[in-house]
Length: 152
Image (cartoon, rainbow, N blue to C red; front, side, top):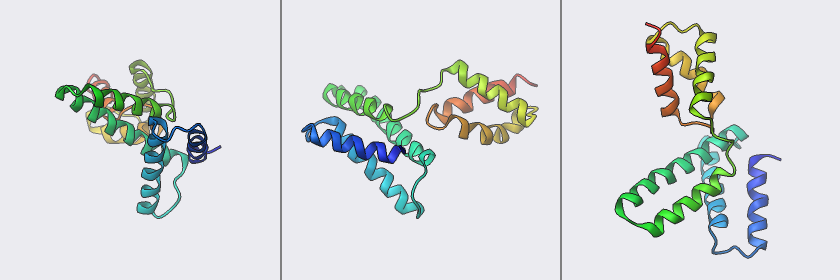
């Protein structure tokens, strides 16, 4: 079952369970709308990898909003964002630990034959498809930069 099919199935189940005002149903609807908008923008149905990208972006947006709400002292909105993040996380693969990410980065560095910071683009180009939806690009970039700077 594709990710889009799973979202549709879960939405139907949430509706049958009378979750009309509940977070799960609204998050699934928002995610499906974001996927549909992306399909319209790209002009083709999204693959599972592309759907993962959209879901990861939705989760990241909520995490950023969560930090803003915490700073503003809006506990009601903090709790809502945490629930929404939890629902989205259930559709994403298990996140990589920093050690797992570093190990993958080292493998890619060896594969592309990177010799230093000047090869950052080559490494990231190969690494990002492997970690899509499982780690943030900024975290991967930081780790790759550290590993490449040690090479000099």
